[in-house]
View 1 (tube, protein in one colour):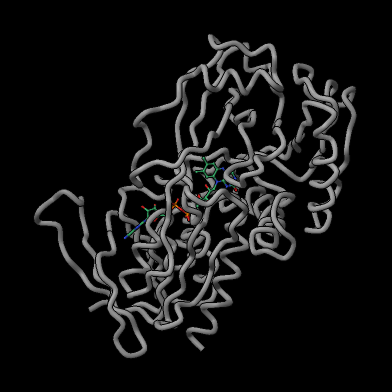
View 2 (cartoon, rainbow, N blue to C red; view 1 turned 30 degrees about the vertical axis):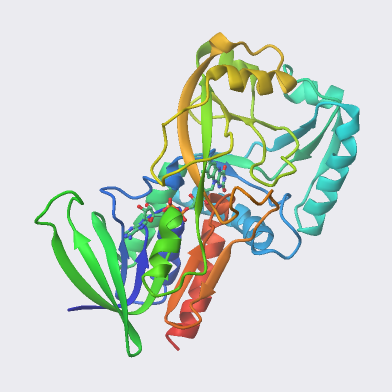
Length: 378
Ligand SMILES: Cc1cc2nc3c(=O)[nH]c(=O)nc-3n(C[C@H](O)[C@H](O)[C@H](O)COP(=O)(O)OP(=O)(O)OC[C@H]3O[C@@H](n4cnc5c(N)ncnc54)[C@H](O)[C@@H]3O)c2cc1C
């Protein structure tokens, strides 16, 4: 049986960033990903925004790891030639009664250590985004846009250069604590193939970074503390000359239900702009396309801030699934990331509910998990 110091389950942006962080200090690091390529799940089905950290409650993991991750992501992108644009964003109040919410958001951001926040008037909105209609906005200079796909691959490259083994088409099917180690059962090869190989690796530390499936992976160790509810975010895209209606990033005020940051406008690195993501609870962790919202549903909300946009400008884009810990029956609130050692199997570390701002926070999460690994392998 192969032996590993550390085995990471899940080759999304978080698993890959953790692989980069832990392989700087330890040898015999494995990362296993069930799909044929890294980052095929949530990590490349998002807005690609390097968030600032303004939205989350003070001292929460989301606030701390997002603010730190924002800085680390820019540094990493510079160093490893990952395309990005450090463009800032506007959170726009469409009407005067929303202005107090901008002030509250600014205060929350400042409490979290976000620098340079400024409330600007309608004239400044027009200067930055001539087609956006609003009475005031919060300008957030540290926000930007990154290539999520290239970021995943760059974290993976760093880990590989440091000696980590990243294996795709390898699905974890069982976890069995055995003394101070965990025996990890793997199914290698295409999942449908009947003759898919079974293998076992014995690991001193297992890190569960399985995204939408982190609850099911934890359950393999008998830990049923969490249930993940997929909440689909859908996008529309505007291509061609009409994409000049948006220059950078424009957000409405966030939904009070905490489900999403609201349908926003993101100028992509490839010159189009995205409208989305929406937020709908769905059945099934691979339910990306069933019962898509009609384009009309996007135009109605988009026109609040961008009156010139027309239904004919939009085409349906991709979707992504948020791994929410809040069931549909609970009306909201922001739930923090869960990053914890298993209480009964302490050589396992679980990362659960790793929704937004997980892309941004990934490098800071990598460092945070590396500290937990230090305790496990002490
Ligand atoms: C619509 C949307 C928009 C978003 N926008 C942003 C944004 O702009 N900025 C931001 O910072 N964040 C954003 N996010 C959040 C961000 O995308 C996620 O936090 C991040 O991608 C989570 O990464 P992950 O590695 O945990 O998950 P994933 O990318 O889902 O990776 C988990 C991996 O584990 C693998 N896996 C699962 N089970 C097993 C198993 N048994 N064996 C082997 N492999 C397994 C899966 O195949 C998968 O590849 C957004 C999310 C959504 C859905």
